[in-house]
Image (cartoon, rainbow, N blue to C red; front, top):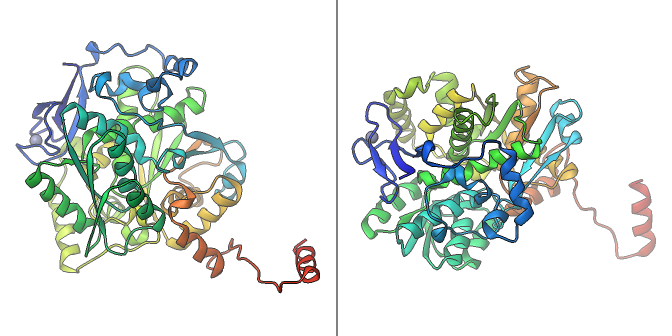
Length: 447
Ligand SMILES: [Zn+2]
């Protein structure tokens, strides 16, 4: 076999076949990775060879921005692969957003994952996870979600004929996302609680009912999410940027990105690994607090579990519930925390938290000068601005900010920001009498 699953805990290191549906190490309870026997896989000698597949994009596997890189996630046969044309996303050079964040011209790039079929980066992971689900013969699937996952799961489930149940916290989901889950035909269950409550429930429900779990502790999802990094490198002419900046919620992306770069370096396909900045919202800053204040580190895999369990016990004792307008990263017990610590180690990473006000201002700038994004995505640009102010990132370094979701995912936050003049870049609609002269006067007055 060219692929297998392996426990990330080096004290355990247990290995399992890719056909096993376990999601957590049965021996020690830690997270699992998909790993590869690279000598059994024909990986192209140069990254640019993946790009040549564009020439035959009438083939669905070459059109997919995930499966175009299939040798890098070689865990299932083509017959099981599910694709709906995900990963047709762009890397846009954006000098105006760069100027806002304090960058020189030509140095900031925005990776628009909102251009995926369901409007978020999640599709990169779902195409991979649903391929695994089909490989193991799953008939029904489930997930807990702050919104984007449920939309993506619902879309992929009906694309390949699986039943689908999604769990969401009551009143905590953006309207754009909720509308997708219902429209795509998922059984949508609202639990009276937050995302962390949903996450606990869905794991129990999946094991009791034998449903295929599609949360980001599913290692195959993260394999798909690695391709976001390949496409950034592709967008830079197969060169690696100096920094990757990504919002931090459940920490699946940052974990996947670290693994992607580690593997590319291991295979000799890149010469250096970029640095990574992970940006939390201040109302959901578990990672920032643990890493910067409690000094939690990967430590070769020997993570100090007591720091984490004490922290979570404290959250429970305080009855803490995370709160941010960036609902996609409103998570206080991130599932992929340990893998993220590993990624921070691989990428010499930093972690920061930014306020909702800074997120909304950055979002308005991305909307004004770019293609727009949902609030959580804008944390990346707000984080860049902070790291520029701190001098951690230089103004002539090459930076790629990952914009994880489409602007229409969360219209309420956008409308409130502009209509209620919440920030420096609010652009509210102006009321005018139903009268031609008044309308013309108003347009002239705006210059
Ligand atoms: Zn284990």
